[in-house]
Image 1 (spheres, rainbow, N blue to C red):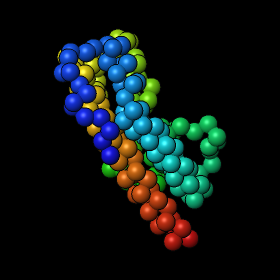
Image 2: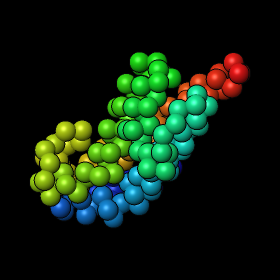
Image 3: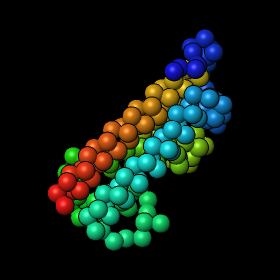
Length: 155
């Protein structure tokens, strides 16, 4: 469901903290970013379940998505293409949840998302990127669940 429409944008150049403020005020952006956070938590738990099913012993109470991916790689529990997809999703998720303000305050360089030559309507681009990430995370969860099912089935 798209809440915001082009009608609310003036197609005005917007940059830096002003663009960040628009993102922060966007109900759709913040809602979708919240869904990414929830999906990421789900992905972490599914990785923990997979690791536990394969008797991988680590301190899961302090595990991050990146460390869980590393454990799956170290223990050869997922194929290379899945590990690459997990790495990509982890990097994108970290960027969106930890670096947006840093991007627009000039603390980090532009990498995944643009920060220069933006219009207020470019919020839609950010919303699309967050939605794509959410879909990718849910797809990875489904594949990892299937992998866990295969492990249980073999036992």
